[in-house]
Length: 379
Image: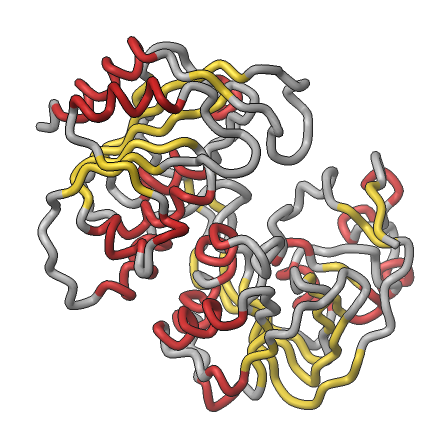
């Protein structure tokens, strides 16, 4: 059973605080990947060294979003691939374990800041699978399009840039609850789909391979480096459709939707926007590539902003109870002209609350009009 353990970091053994070589020989509960490679028979291949982020200041239409701004990364960590003998991959998220159930968290969404990470009481006994396996999974990537596209698939870029080749790989670990869509994307990026391990895996399951090639998390949680959109735009190579569309990306299903959608649509209609639902499109990435202007509520429906052409103007409707920089970061890294409108949520959680907000939000139509004027006033 998996449960949230508050304050568990205080009790962990870490190599930086070991006082003797004897203590260092005991595998700690977790370890940075480059440190693990130094202590064990593993190799770390750096693709990107640590460097400051180069985000431009996002444009605010009305109020600032302080929680979002503070969550934008100031520095990118080192990114690369750990070449790990006898490594285990756990659950649908593909958490990486080395010898002695040593967790290597830099390959997860949580990174080295693991205070929110749900740890198991015991690690599962892994199923032994012969051969070399490439990790192309991440937290929630098995069921969420945004996490698959932005947190899992870009690991392929690190694999390629680190100098590995498909001839070295027998398996590709990418559990999915949407296998047909997952395979279609993997095939589009040249992944040999006959090597893919796609079965949905519960949190208590694990596989142990002779060798694991584990790309690090591609960026930091909720933040995407500039190479992510450059890599993903490979899917549109050869596409030359003109930018003629103005998209309003609706979030009409589930929780965290606009409570005054009808009013929003009335305002947007005056500016020539079409009501667009990416869930009903055969190829939403192509639709976004044809967009000149995009307005949309924060959510996975904005994932395909990554396929917008540089210079596309974007206005994100950001709930005040859900101030996360996913699509701000993505837009700025993709070279888009980005602004956000902070919208009042119907209820407010504590700023430290975990997970997505369940509350709908209200869009001020006067502020929305100002935002649309900003959109069409493109240089």
